[in-house]
Image 1: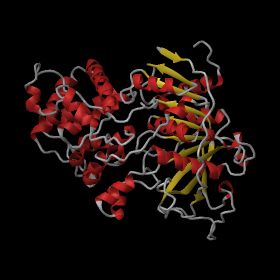
Image 2: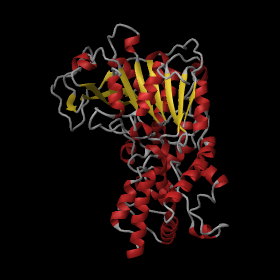
Image 3: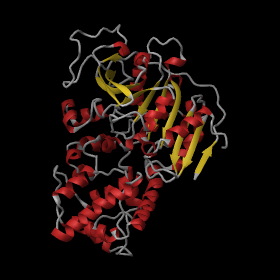
Image 4: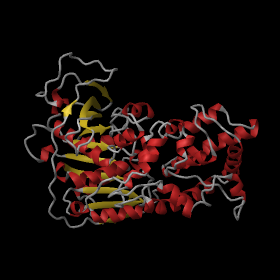
Length: 503
């Protein structure tokens, strides 16, 4: 099924505030040996630097670039900086056209996840973008990957809990966008026309949230925008998000158990075991029943049912044959959960919905306890007391909970910071609805009808707010459609070109 919304009529575009220029970072990571020991002159264009590490992958030449950006873009007197990393990929054979080829900037999902190095740019969205004439810029958003990564190890240097929380407050979409804007100015410096200085944007999931902020702050810097599974709800707090997505989680659980009916008994056996035993994971975290339920985050992705079934079958087999979970099973379960390796996701996830002085206060937990506690019960004694004690035990999705700060080894070390951020009421505005209503940037967005993470109804309202937004609603894919099929980016580019005429 595919549903389309016609673009609205466009109106005059709002202006944008231009920040000061970014300085390319002359600081090299310890593992990188620069080709010159001389300081980099500010007069040398970033694209002409000879100290940048570069290498080839199939279809492209990769340049690994670092940029020093202000921690707080709004306070020029604050001299603190973060180093932002970006992989710049130029199509093979066009290395001498870096100064003229337009850029497409890819913004990764999350929050809290870095861009991976592609093994090749001859397929997927990379190939689609290259065929459209672009060179690629894959940005590790601040706090992730090689861009001032957030962890217990890196935060401790900032001092007290209050100081650490204040530091992390600068790692939301508005700061990410301002980083990208400064990088854009550095890379496009010297281009002769205003059009050639603009960049295209591609945002997956949270990357689409960032694009909508970019459209609000710097619309004149964008040539076009493509959003996949990430048209954000224009809300001031997260509560409505979970009222919409918990029912979708229930539906996905029902579909999972319809495919694997024997997993009803297996999961109940596992939950009973985890409720009675203290199971410690190899990394020191605790595999509780409630943490095991979080494997359901995979239900939002194509192939997720099968990956969870494999883990359930493995764990149930261990219990049947040995009465406990093997190290191998525990390691696989831990590997399927990235909250420790990407802790920013947990400690900042709900803040991506907060605007205008609203605190998140663990919205997913509050909504679950108030409206969906029985459906997602994890305590074995309470499961047995339900009206149907033999009913399936449901998995949860991408929602985050305060008890994760006890069950996950790395998150334990960030507990005080996370609790502080959940109560913070100083979040500013992420979206300007007046600017979005006056948008003239061509925007194409796909929203997935069965998306368990970004509710299609809330996304549709936002798409109707952004002037000229072409929204494609489909049930052909789940949240990870961009990584599953090249049809997704190809179709979005066709929407932007006006090649889809039967809407």
